[in-house]
Length: 420
Ligand code: PMP
Image (cartoon, rainbow, N blue to C red; front, side, top):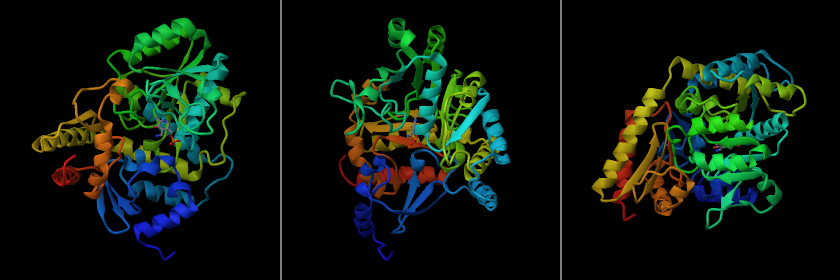
């Protein structure tokens, strides 16, 4: 291929690939082709450098191209990639995974968060003999028919894609999150139909919202009362909010939890973990399969990434860096007389312009002026800060003082470049 400019690559890409992208999430992103990445920085094919606060939507939690993880994976691959059968690294990686999380008894590895959510829902249905599941407005659990949702003007859940089966959308009941009374009322009426309650225990796909004090505990109690399986979707939060994910950070243990992103140093690996008495059903009647599950690459990446995290836990550094960036962004915005809100915690926070009110749920988020920040993001990207238009910022173990200085200078320059 001789095309090297971004417009000509894009022209070629849209001829080959619908929209020029391989995931619809990228349809709305700025037009960039990256050449390489290292640590907390990215470089595009024109040599422009960016500080990265998106981390590939989360996986590069150790920073891009972590040398130890890459070395361990490359060495492991010399002996083969996929056996279609067991190999010792599965046991090493599985043990490390369980040990670090602390609460689950068993784990199954897969490739994407989407599929692990499906495995969790199937297992919950199998063990309860019930079909319905409860989920929450604004939470994302993958792109398949029974979990993908959009919302109409009144906030009511609707199909998010042409071709999506309405009957699958109807499999779930969508409640407001962070509202234990709403869940309690619903379960009093229909608890006997419900196999599972699934949630992001820290809502990251709509804002960056902590559970209210006591909320997760109430949900846990309600699930126990009604014989319902509690699933934490920790695809974002797992190994990011703490070594033991949101379950450790907020001190509430689910029955099952899904993982992905931060668990494997950027390699495509996901997991479902949980109570042994539930998970064992995968060996006795509940199907979960996959050609690429627990490949040599996947197991080596999990083993290496989790070893790095255990030996040098970056959580305090990340907490501090995230706090300093949030505070710095607020200060810089104030010097431009631009009202900014930055809500969240060190490893994940959400930024928008306008009313600095704290939000607690999806409805609160919808009341913010999200479009104004979304329109500003291409300018921020032009100034060398790689972030998403939806407002989420992720911090990695590789972010340091140099990135702090760079991001605040670049944010300042982007605001100075014109009105927002
Ligand atoms: N659950 C959550 C909470 C997620 O954030 C995502 C992806 N962003 C998924 C599930 C789906 O994971 P994947 O994109 O790997 O299929």
